[in-house]
Length: 440
Image (cartoon, rainbow, N blue to C red):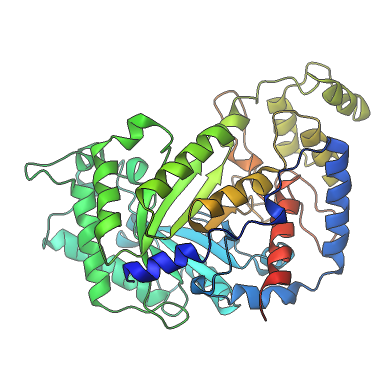
C-alpha cells in the first residue's frame, strides 16, 4: 500500500466526529434511562441490517470502525453474539508455535473455521500472528536470516494465509512486541539491529513478494507494531520500540501500525494515542486491544458498600456490609447473577466507567485510528473448563471489559446473551448509528 493511499485513509477518517463524541455528563439514573431506550430500540432492529456496513472497505471513508476482539479464542466468534452486537469487524490472533509444533492443524482447527465463517458472513477479519517466543528458551529465539529455522517460520505464515485465503481484511505481523519476545531479541545485536524487528521486516518482504490478496480482492494490507503503554517515556525510548516504529514508518510493505491501549485511566490513554499519531501521521492506525483494566484492578478490594449507591445496592440484594468487589465477583463466578443485579452492581460502583467506549471512540478517530477492536465475550460455551475464576488483589480483571459476560450473568432470555453494563449499549449504539449514516 502506497504512502499516498495511507494518507488518504487517514484524511478520510479524521474530522468525522459527531454527536457520539459528546461525552456523557449525566447522572447514573439518566444513564439507566438511556440504556433502557437503547435496549428497546435494539429489540426492534433487524439484525441483518448491518450487512452493508460490514462490507464497507477501509477506503470508503466511513470513519472509525469499532469491532470485536477475541484474542486466541477464535471459536468464540459465535454468529448469534455477532448479530446481537451488530459486529462488523472481528479480530483474533494465532499462536504460531501451537501450529508449528503440531498442537493445532490448519486443516481441522475450529478457531480458523470460525474466523473464516465470520468473514463469509460479510464481516471484516483482522488476523494477528502471535510469535509466542517468550518462555521457549532457544526454541523461541528469533531465527537468523535465510536459516532453516526462518524458512520454517515463514512456512507457518504461508500456511496460515493459505488456510484463511479470501477471508482476511488485514494481517498484523505481530501481537505484542515486548510481551511476546525474548529480551535478548529486543536488544541490538552486533550489527546494531534488533533481531525481532529485523525478522518482521524480512517476513513482510516475504509475504509482499507473494502478492497476497485481502477478502475484497485488493492487495492484503500488512500492519505491524504491537506496542503497549506508549504513554510511558520508558517504553517510548526502548531500542526495540524506536526501531520498530521507524521500520513501520518507512517500509512500503507496511500499510499501517497496530498498537494496544490497556491503560489505568483516560489521561494516559489519550497521551498514548497522541504520541503514536504524532510519530506516524502518514499511515493508518488500528488498535486491536484496549481497556481500563488497570483501573478496574485497583478497586477489586474496595467494599461494594463504600458509597451511598453501594449501600443501597447491598441492602437491595441482602449483601454483607463488608463484602468486597472481589467477593461479589467470586460469588458471581460460582453462581451467576441476574442481568438486573449485575447492572445494579456496576452502576453502584463509582470507579466503573460504563461510558468508556463512548468517551474513547472520538479520541481514537481524532488520532488516526481507523479500526479499534474491543473485548467481545467471556467463554460462551456452557460447562466449559476455566469458566470459574478466583479474584483477589493480584487479579487483572479482564472479564470486566467484555461486551458479553455469560460466565458471570444469567441470560435474560432464550434469544439474548448476558451483556456488560454500559459497554454493550455504547458499542451497539455506535454500530447502529454507523448503519444509519452509511451510504447504501
